[in-house]
Amino acid sequence: MEHPPLAKRLKRFLRYLLIRSVLLCLQPLPLGWARALGFRLGGLAYTLAGGERRKALKSLTVAFPEKSDAERQALGRASFRHLGAAALEVACTGALDRGLEELVAWPDADRAVLDAALAKGKGVVFITGHVGNWELLARRVARAGYPSQSIAKETTDPRLTVLVERFRARGGVRSIWRGQDGAARAMLRALRAGEILGLLIDQDTKVQSLFVRFFGELAATPRAPADLAVRTGAAVVTGFCHRVEGGGYRLSMEEVPVPVSEDREVAALELTQALSARIEAAIRRTPEQWVWMHQRWKTRPPVAPQPVLAEAAHATAR
Image 1 (tube, helix red, strand yellow):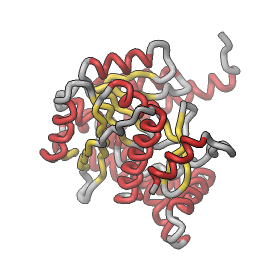
Image 2 (cartoon, one colour; image 1 turned 60 degrees about the horizontal axis):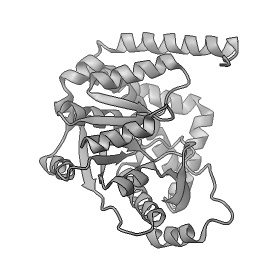
Image 3 (cartoon, helix red, strand yellow; image 1 turned 135 degrees about the vertical axis):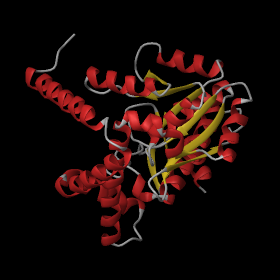
């Protein structure tokens, strides 16, 4: 097994120490203080991190061509501020867990959506995106007693991966690390056991993907959730945790029908498009609460896509 160069290992170690130190300092803070500090740090990051700011503005230009430069700049700054506040809120684990139910509202109607999906007995493929506070979404559901596992990508530093895993485990969320041996079998076991399997599909990552419309442009979108649902008959639910006025959050959920088709490829494409459309709608409700610095349209579709996929993509985008 090859080890990274000494300089890279030292950089990762120092980054780990910095993150651990920051977390230790933040844990005793009240949520309101952490939120205010994160809001300010996010605004500072927008000013200083020129590369990330330019990526955000480029993405906002693709998504909102009708907006002025000033409007997109305001959205970009607000996005950095929101993400800073959300990150520091999550770091205050003590205050977070003591007041989680009060911080994150879960209306009865939205809880009923998840209950009805689970009652079908084949598990739930739960889809969300990097909108609002996805960590609080998983934590709120798990701490309410719903058996939950989330699919996640390991960090480049195993020590940070352990930190993330411990944080989620304290909230009742178990992690399946994408790419590890047995990950696919673990996903199937979770659904067969009638559990909730959470996945985020709003980023361009190095996984098997389908090209579907996202803000009017074709975007490479992970296909695993649709394949799992089509293969197993699991229910599919989308859910989001949006920040609302006053500093708290609100969960919203919707069951998405799984297409019925003899062609699993067409069904997977149609479902992936439907899920992408729900995520786009959630972002449009609160565009300042998405990760615009992510290069969502980086991977381009092949010049000559398969005819069936191309036809289905056109049909589902209409």
